[in-house]
View 1 (tube, helix red, strand yellow):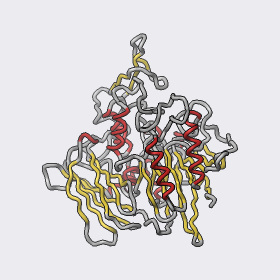
View 2: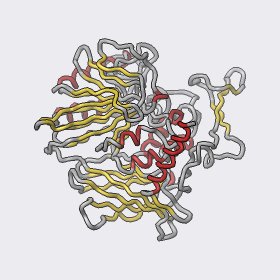
View 3: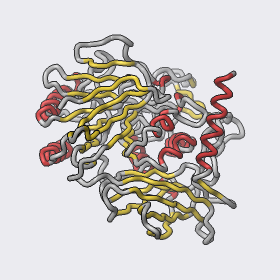
View 4: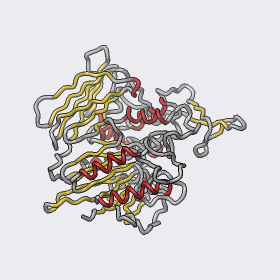
Length: 490
């Protein structure tokens, strides 16, 4: 009873905080899925905006569609067991549509305007109205440049219909640009993975967002598996519903209007488990791999490429690789030609690393590079036997350049060190405790420095201590309680 009252109070408080920074009037359009501030550098940023028909999400008391799978031998429809290569059939509850099921936030035509300024400036810089695109989740993206390094900016996003000059909804936001490459700076950032809808741990959304917001992060990285298409995304429209229901939670809207983010996709938010180009299955129905890659680009702020590197001051540079679109087929025998990153991305990676003079070079990867991973049941990442050749190449190169690997994908937190190269890897673990699993608690292998089968998030930080930069990582549980701290040796 006490827990129920607490969750209700937390939900009400989150909504009060959100409404204080989001206003709406009239018949819309609205901004129920908020904004996302992304791809922030020392002089640029991208602001993602989506318009909605309603001012809030359909509540969690509404039902969701169900799916059954056609037995190819009998023709009968049967419940899902695993991920069968069978044709799915969807069943919407009577009287419900895609616009009225749980978490639904239908998109709306309309236009948006962006105003931004440095906090210290008196006047707004105005980016004129632009229409959202119905073909791209009713979203648009503002690319702004010419910003000052290490400077806090305020945002005001305004919405309106195509036929009226009236502002129907608005939302405030803020972010700070990265420090210039030559500037020693304190920097802290948050990393998480595995945020499935079924494992959301409060009525207001994932608790990791308000918990990590208390640490005042400079930026946030979601390493992928942001949503999980496997069970309920059998069409393009249903895939987009996954994003609507996740990013209309008050915790998520409040977080992303004030923390710049970098998004990486993995298998479940591309298509399905262990997905790769050319993969064949009837399990995903009418929803294709190619549609999945486009939905991702429509739902997050993103530049020309989904692999990129960003400098955060003198002492930190991060690399965010693409782990799905250039990979070989998973069942292919391992060898020099088998790849996850692809030749062009690998060449770019090596060239940019060798050109970097950052004190700390951190790869934030959607999947493990070091591991250890499970010995059976997984053959999808560089820590698995199926991609060992490219994994060995990466580990040697990264160790030679004193890099650190941070990874998502695995549903447990760890710090490990590769036995052959001494390359360090820190796994952020999943966003919530319900999603934790896949490893036995207490099963420490020689590679492990820290191991905990728990959800939460990871904080990375560069701090200037006595005139010298120090890189450290801290694991937290969803409530923001510190579980582990690891200082990277110089």
